[in-house]
Amino acid sequence: MARAATLDRLTWQPATVAAIRVEAATARTLVLEVDRWTGHVPGQHVDVRLTAPDGYTAYRSYSISSAPGPHRLEVTVQAVPDGEVSPYLVDVAEPGDQLEIRGPLGGWFVRRSTDPRPALLIGGGSGVAPLMSMVRAATNPTRLLYSTRSPSDALFTADLATAQADGDGRVAVTHLYSRVAPPGWPDPPRRLDADALARVAWPRDADVVAFVCGPTGFVETAADLLVDIGHDPANIRTERFGPTGG
Image (cartoon, rainbow, N blue to C red; front, side, top):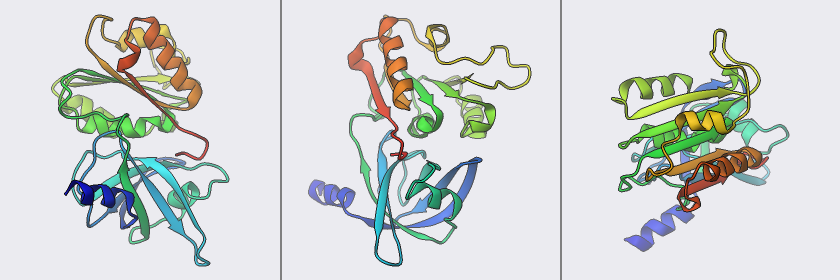
């Protein structure tokens, strides 16, 4: 059984686009139906492959943004200029289209349901996608610090508000805007810094696991700040998004 499950993860499988949701001007969530999909662990990703009429293929990796479940998953894609895959998924793909996926993949940047520790999630831009899966599946105290350039760039705005309102205090979401803040926002626009992190981080003696995802510079800054305030590097898990969106 274990061997069969491993082979399924490494084998390309057909996926049907069941629905598409607009998240931002250049970002879409694709709901994919996959017959042999048995679920994932929050934080994992899939490879998505496209095949052109002439047989040319291209694939990229995208984090799963939905909660675990069978037969269906969601990937949230930010269009990358001159990309081979993301512009099609964002601007061209329609419900009913056929894609191929491979996965779920990844075993380090994952939030397992058996881990009893509180989770501190720090996302930059589209790096919130795998963290959204963790928020949706949260059973333990979870705090998300989400940094974007402006409110119009933020993903999952309504879903995050719902998760915070319906979580019985289990989920707390803090937004940080680096360029443009909403009207009446109490803080001026700024990048992630020690003060912003101190507002959401648990005390240094708390047994907490941290997940940081976003562009390389953002991830390195966040990880350094966590260490500076006393978090054990062994409890800090990072994932960087490259220029291809993978």
